[in-house]
Length: 113
Length: 112
Image 1 (tube, rainbow over the protein chains, first blue to last red):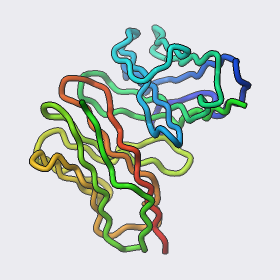
Image 2 (image 1 turned 135 degrees about the vertical axis):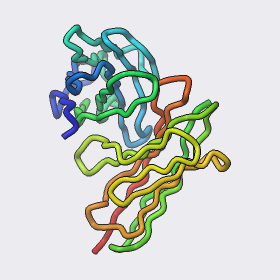
Image 3 (image 1 turned 135 degrees about the horizontal axis):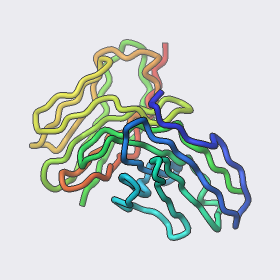
C-alpha cells in the first residue's frame, strides 16, 4: 500500500459526459501528479501540482483540467469525453522538490461508451 | 529532448533464469534514473533508483547501474521467480525539472 488513495476505482460513462477523479496523497506529500495509461500510448504525464499551485504540464488535453485543494487532495476533471479517453488514470504523490520518488495510487479505470 | 527507450516485450522466462531488461535514455545534463514495477491490477511501485553516474540501485534482488558513457540503466536479476511477473518501466527525471519520462514498459512472465 503506497498510501495514495484514488476514487472511484472504476467509472463507466458515455461520450460527451464529464467526470471527476479524486486523489488523496500520502500524508505529508505536497506534490500530486496525474498520469494516463492506455494500451496505445503507454504512460503519459498529464500535470503536476505542488502545494496547491500548478507546477508542470505534460500532454494534457484542453478538455481536461485539475486542481489541488488546501487539504492537498487533488481532482482531475475530464469533460466532453471521447471513446479514446478510456484509460487508467493514476495519481502519484511526492514530498516535493525537483528530484523525488513518486508513490502511485491504484488508479481509476475510466471506460467511455 | 528527454526520452527513455526500453526493450520490447513481452519477455517470458523460466523460474531461476537470469533477467536483463535493457533501458537507454536521452537527456540533457545528469538525470536521475528509476525502475518502477506494475503488478497486475495495481499501480506502479518504485523498484530502485540511481541519482548519479556509476551509482547502482538495488532492491529485492534486482540491480541496475547508471552508465553515463552508454546512457543506459539496464535492469538485471540473477534468478527470477514466478512472483516477479509484472510490467517493468524505466524512467528518468531530468536534472532541470521534476517531470517523469517513462519508457513504454516491458512485460515479464515467469513460468514455473
